[in-house]
Length: 376
Image (cartoon, rainbow, N blue to C red; front, top):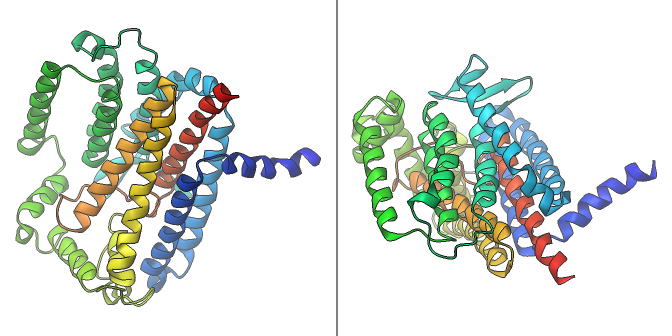
């Protein structure tokens, strides 16, 4: 009985040892996301989505605490197993176990909720790449020979995600990997070759049937919103109208005309930022952006102070993931980037996204212990 009572105290103690600024920003974004989800869905579902959001947040925080409880050496030793589990989940999506939602076969349906393995892949790729790149004997930038294993580690989940196809998650994984590779550095001729190859991949994606028809429609609507006036073009136009109507301080929570009128489909997921823009106004929207970027800054702060290669690589890769995903989501809400279905970290509704974001917070807390143990 005493052990059962002390467990919540241990969880709270672990969270208290985490970087306070990072924890506060992540918790603040989570709370804001639940409120915005509630506002966006109250007119059709009451408090149902908000309650699920709270449950997802509680599970996410528990997952973060569990990861923090691991010894950093144990976490690194588990990296291959975590990576393998993520690959198996990505493979499972492509079997009859997978489900197609919104045009992409990216989900596994289980009783009560859905799992998106591409979110798990972000966490798995972070620890796998950090494990592969850490503690190199050669201080020189990576050449092609040294890049073979890291690129293979990236290529396998990336290929499986493109087969779904999930272009947005593929972009995030790619730039997460680029962030990690920047820590040891890459030789110039390799960077030039990688840039050329990336341009070729984009060309193939745009001009061949690799992308699903709905994804090509999204890209066309980005170039010319009138090309799909009743589909994604309409949705993006409504999102921009909602954000623009918020003014400086917004129309008030639960008071936005577009949000409460239900003019924006799936507003609580991909386009939740439009709720902030309309109902909280420019000040509230800037506050959300500031918190997202503050999370990135604190991750980089932990990386800068770390004396351990694995810890530094983990934090930089996570920072790359969060900054890319944040900018992509904001860009598609503002009409500056194509709609790719990438969620806004901590804020967009979705269990898989919430779990992966809080798992990332747990990773930062875990690798912080490396520095503390050395100082001790």
